[in-house]
Amino acid sequence: MQEEKNNSSKSDRLQVNMSYYQTSDVVRDQQSQDLQLACNIKRTPLSFEGKIKETLLVREALSALYQVVSSDFRYVPKDRSSYLAYQRMRSQNSNATMWQAQQAYFDWLLRNDPLAFLILDPIISVHPDGLLFEVFSKDEGSYGNLLLDWSLFESKGKPKYGTTNIDFSENLYEAIQKMRSYNEAKISLGAQEVKVEAKKDQTVIEKKIQVPLSWIRGFLQVQSAATLVKEKVTMDAIDLYNVLRQLRFNKDQKKGGRAIRIELVPGENIRLVMEPWQKVIHLRQTYEGKVAQVVKLWGRRRLKMLQRILPLASSIHLHLIGSGLPCFMELQSESMRFTLGLSGFTASDWTKSVHFDALLPRQNQDVKSLKKVTDFLQKNIVASAADIAKKTKLSQKDTLKALQVLCQQGKAMYDLYKYRLRPLTEEDLELSQLEYRNDNEKVAHDFVKQQLVTIEKENHIFGKGVEVVGMVKVAHEKREYRPVLFLDVSGRAVKAECTCSFYRKNKLKKGPCSHLVATYMQYLIEEDNRQKNQDKITVETRVFSKRINDQQQVFQLSLDRKHVRKRWGLDGGKLRLQNQVFNSVEEAREVYRQQIKILESKNYLDTTR
View (cartoon, rainbow, N blue to C red):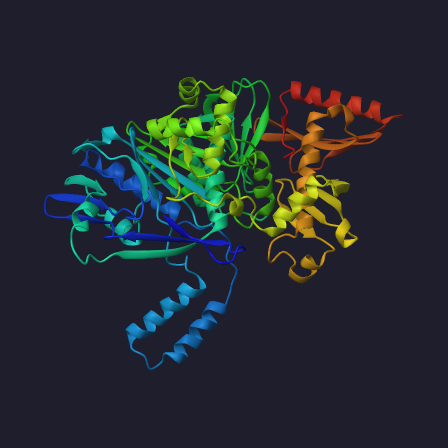
């Protein structure tokens, strides 16, 4: 890639220029088929040629990769503006030839939505252990990487290591579908560029794509999230098949939840619960952790992109960070590893993205160990964190800190097992442009840092969520703003209001105002502090559940200063209520904490978030 800086510092897009001597294609004759992947000639050259041993595996893996890069699961409401523009263009070009009318349409499309017919070309790396492909969807909700081991090929000559972009169009996808196992298959990467470069007046295919900065930021964040994985769940192929089958034959419902609830109870088999149908899938793996917990996986419809590669997988692993946060579904065979990362949110779901931002530290480039780690990766390309720490003589903490910074800068990536040198762009990214999603988010961080935000009230409504009422005092404006958020049980903002002029003019059409974002950030900070300082809490609500056969027992426990309220019963049924009043807040808090310990000892799962 080669970036051209926009004259406007506030531009929300980055122009990416890519050049190819030819398009990628599958060249066939009667007995062979040659998969020729065209590389971006504006990046450091690399090369690899070889014979493919398992044609079907390569075909299905690349097809699944295309499903990820071309996917867009965002909700699209009816919008007649494009149709009206088409009608105007049609009347203007009524006397034009077919070719002229077609060109006029594509010119209009390029001006109004350049990403409508151009997908962002995948990143490919030639590494010592294989070929690595990386893609990110247009809706910023799915990340995919594919590692093809060298054992899958009979190499012709020594590969030249490096990272570049490859032309991956719909035409290449359709050509890949015609690859057959009974014909000899070859793959060439970068080799054709060497042959055509010597020709004079060689035509160059230019691509100019306006990449949203939010897309680049999302790519780096979701990929960096792999370093935060806490739990690893092993599944059988039939388990994932049952999940996909349930999604195929059942439509999502507006009420009742749309998550896959992963129940982790010490000493019991791990369970996958499909909401809202309460379909339970029991895994063979026994959870060996010490604390019972529930992790909710969002974006489950995106798992359907794995259906073609599922029959080829010998093992499946699900890597989890936390409820509502990115997760990674990993499918492995002897010579292939395909990883699908689900961000847990789309570009429009601002609350979950802000929550995720809080997990990743905002590091600058002034890290002492950064140069040592960078030099080591440039020499070795692929290594584990332990090996890097040992060879560079750095502590494990400093090594991981430097590696995380490199991942956030787009200079390295983590594949759930090892760190790899993988520059996202040929030139360094301007990190100042990627630090915040927009100006409102930047202002919100300033409000929180200056301690201008307070949470005035929290109203917990059982089964629906929590209403958060905040106050933001802006001294230089001499005003107080009253943002109000209603968060559902999944933590998503289903309603948001503010007294500022930005909200009155735009509502949420241009995203949340800085006061709403600041209020949500302050709410997350106070929630985290409550978890760390249980001795000082005065208001809190926790929800616990336990599965007994096919029924789910629900227990809600609320502390409201001197009051402790209990609600319990079967999920979906009428709950019994008990209200206790104590002489002091301390006494109520102690009873509240004891009740939580009793529930946890009985393997009740905390489903509050």
